[in-house]
Length: 231
Image (cartoon, rainbow, N blue to C red; front, side):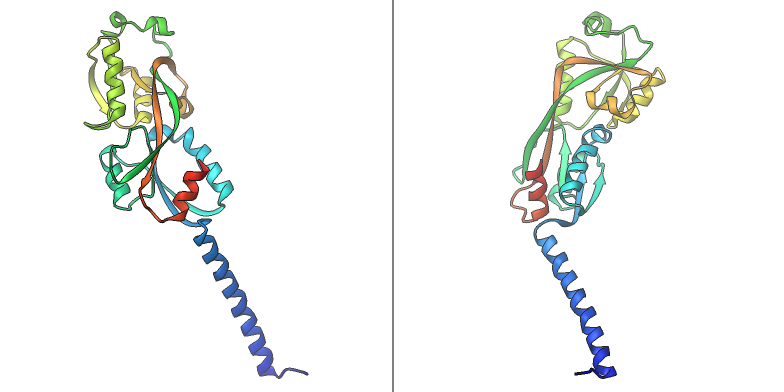
């Protein structure tokens, strides 16, 4: 049986429609399984050159069709952004106290005293109360209820110092640049050595900072669940 010109046209038209429907069905299935779609992830500055590239490599390998948006937010906005669906996942260094959020500890890393390479502090033995007392610090800060800030306070209490500081910031990458200019010394997570360790020295301290992943309780987004399970 030979098709008429009209029949051939309809055959080609419906073959294209069927192919398009199969593609839509496949995309819908991938979204349903959490293999595609978009996820918004917020993270602190300290993870930009270390943890985040490793995490994204894992996520992209497992879900190559997933779109990922990365954001950096002020500490004071992080929890609200997660609760209000502006972001889907939050990496941070603070213990979550919210009844609306879940947290999972992913890693622990040392905190370091960071000094210029020409500074006379070279080892942990150089770091004493008397030696630190006349140092100018560049302070990092989170907020009034930041558990990371509390760790810094514990360090200062341990060395019995009240650091003098005219400069403070939430961004460790800025701190690194200021240290290079000789504007002071600071305490930062060791992961900043991956950001730019030239012209600065990292001296590990006997204190650590934890890294957490946070997400909304009872969130039905399968993409979030897949990422949590992957990590």
